[in-house]
Amino acid sequence: MEGQITLQELNSLIRENLELAFPEQIWVVAEIGELKVNRNGHCYIELVEKDDDTDTITARSRATIWAWQFRFIQPYFETTTGQALSAGIKVLVSVTVEFHEVYGLSLNIKDIDPAYTLGDMARKRREVIEKLMADGIFDMNHELEFPEIPSRIAIISSPTAAGYEDFMNQLHGNKSGFKFYTRLFEATMQGNNAPYSIMDALDMVYAYEDLFDVVIIIRGGGSQMDLSCFDHYELAAHIAQFPIPVLTGIGHEKDESVADLVAHQKLKTPTAVAEFLIDKMEVTALYLEQLEELFFDEAEALINREQQRLADALRMFKPLIKSNLDRNIFTLKTLSNKVKPLVSETIKQEKYLLMEKQQLLKTRTASFLKHKTAKLHELTTTTVFTGKMATRQTCQFLDEKKQELIYLSRRKLEKERNTIEWLEKNNELVDPKNILKRGFSITLRNGKVIKNASELKPGDEIISKLYTGSVKSAVKK
Image (cartoon, rainbow, N blue to C red; front, side, top):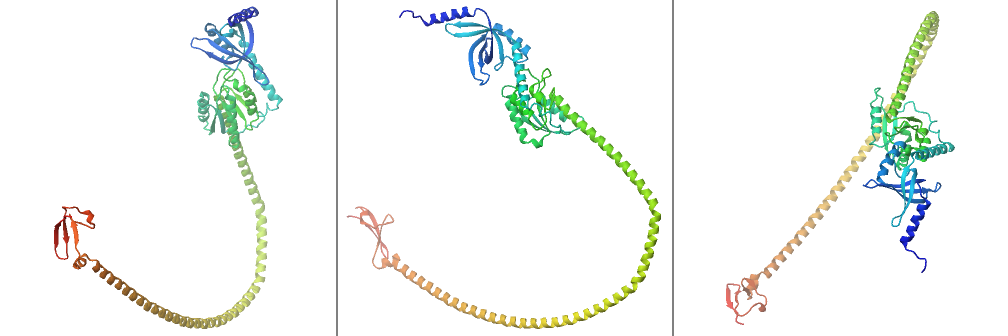
């Protein structure tokens, strides 16, 4: 067929046209999907582009940074941006388009602009802040009242982080001797999974909300890329809406993360967070000491005033009390003279009534005792008679049972005696001696009883036991 070409010829044409179409380097915006460095120092990258709304990949291409270029590009990028050249970041790269007949299309990266990556991170961070403000939650944690005694602390950190150890040493080793209750809720503090790990820890703290005064999110320092997880919208929203004041000590001073901005208080380092809490306790302690001094001063002044008032009252009322007491004594004497005859007459009447009641009680008691004595005698007589009758009947019943038992025992003994006599006679009948006495004999061979003639053969020697003596024989037939 005319016009046909080979695959190699086609690929060569593609290469030649691409070289004509892209003779110079091109600046391309893309996201690093994957990044690998082999043992020779060559860096192999997969560049991707994603849809902003669905996050699906709309374009993909292989790219290479040769080892001699990678040794310069990597440290310059990481020093400028403060983050590692890794998957998940957006970059502006200068590339040449290359096509190989065997290996296909590839981009050769000549340079990376770190300013673009920094700008993209700042843009994303600004968008997160604007969304938090638009949702009306940016200042929610700021508006919570900070506790005067922040002694119960929930800590979100990696247990192996140096910042966590520094925080604990600073907090529990405070010179004022303040006691703090702390509980660690473990979380991953860097990487793509860090926001979700921290949010899970916050959810666990929320389950014990009433047990804590504040929440602390701490970690040591790190590169800007390591700390980019704290610009995550959902994590910032969790912190902003958390019902307990949140303090951050993420350990970087140059920039504030979104998590720092929405937290109730942002401190530079984990140690600074511990100092902040200790200072709060010291302020409260000082306030309480001032209140205590004020209380004692007021109490002492009040006591002095009341003592003076009491002394003045005593001086004022002493003459009045003496005059009032004299009048009351006179009144009491007058009443006493009037009451004495009345009391004497009343006592005499009550004594007479008491004697009458005593005599009446004696008469009624004697009659009651006489009646009860007669009843008791009657009951005793009846009880004795009944007891005798019952005893006689019981003795008669037992005597009858005794006679019956003697009769049955004799019957049983007689029956057993007859059985024994019958067994003895039966044993005599079956005794071998008695059977031999009647003319029978027992045949034995080698001491064994012969019951069947088929057990013998010619030549066998047998013994016949008789009632008296025995006979030895030889079998012929």
